[in-house]
Length: 105
Image (cartoon, rainbow, N blue to C red):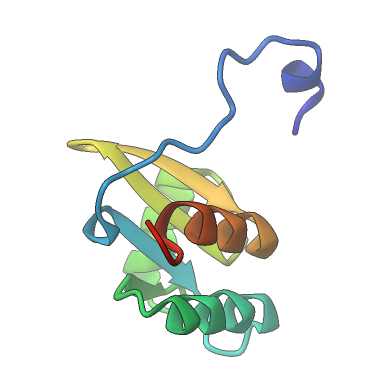
């Protein structure tokens, strides 16, 4: 959260809810322990989410162009056709997935 967000400058910093995992993509690196944590939660939930390894230049470029950071893991959420929300931080990603795609959803 930036100082701008904390002071109330951002209208809505909540990750948008989507109705299908086909609207999600995980940007990750195979050696990253935080990425492994997210992937374990994805497996635990039985989700089939597209994964992009940012060691490939085209995936890194997409992450930088869309999310603005090279940090992984990052969950790309397509909330409208061609419009994306980029969710960083492994625990935030896991909480989002469990809240919206966990048991009973």
